[in-house]
Amino acid sequence: MSTLDEQALIAFRHELHRYPELSNEEFETTARLRAQLEHHEIRILDLPLATGLVAEIGSGEGPLVVLRSDIDALPIEEQSDVSFRSERPGVMHACGHDFHSCAALGAAILLKQQEAQLAGRVRILFQAAEETGQGAPVLLATGALHDAAVIFGIHNDPTLPPGVIGSKAGPLTAAVDRFKVTVRGIGSHAARPHESIDPIVIAGQLVTALQTLISRNAPSNDNAVVSVTQIHSGTTWNVIPDSAWLEGTVRSFSAETRELLSQRFHQIINGIAAAFNAQVEIDWQAGPPSVVNDANWVEFALEQASQSGFEARVVEASPIGEDFAFYQQALPGAFMMIGTGEPYALHHPAFRVNDDVLAPTARYLSELAVKALVKAS
Image (cartoon, rainbow, N blue to C red):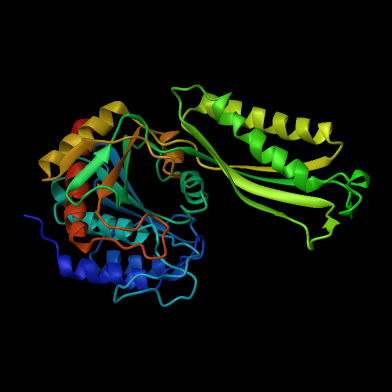
């Protein structure tokens, strides 16, 4: 029977949490994971990755199943009360990637103990740069997922209680698009506004008009979100400035709606600018698409959750972003939400993860991989 040193795994998570690193800067994190894998004699693929790594367990006979975790942290000053708080100012694991990577490490350790009995190979991704959406495309470009039958991913979910694993067929997370709009007008004295092309008035019109992207363009049965999160202009009380800029995000769940919202966004911005005789610059940054779970594999993963002692739930789609979606453009996949039942949301400075969930999640992932190899055979 496979065994796992739960306390050692928890201690290693605390170590990763204490020394977080931002996207594409995870050099020490990668080295720490490499040392753990080498200690357990788990082979590591030689891939052209600056940070992150890929481990493999099993033989070349049979199918290839992939488990994915992520390793990067966020530019947030930690405010949690844990004893292993981040020792790096302004950086913390506020999204639980330390939990994800340690659950995957635990699964690797368990799978290694039964390597001779595996019906194929399991590759475990310790992926860099999820928070920027850059990590998955880089890893895909290495060919590490070539000929894989299926990929599974996890994310902790503080809104679900411990002991629950949730997911759903079809869209689970949103496509993430970021925008920045710069409005260039003509400044003037505040007492002579007729001599200006007032960028503040224009920016206000844009904020209002952008809300119609959802209310008058997105189908009512296809949820979407537009949020303007920053707006900046001016330097003093009696001068109309010559420029303003605003920034925000658009979230959507279908490729068709995403394309429609992008087209209408540009039309609205350019149309209002023309109406006010102003110039605009649009910086539209397309992020990860929506995570779209394969119905067959997500049903299988939820069944395995029940068999592994979890309560399996079908959950609602969430407007968070997740670059796991890029993998699903190349092969079937299922993304699962692991309940941790903590009071603070993802990306909150006081965010924390329930350690009691770590070892059960590692066991679930190892059992899921074993069963998936059999199913894919």
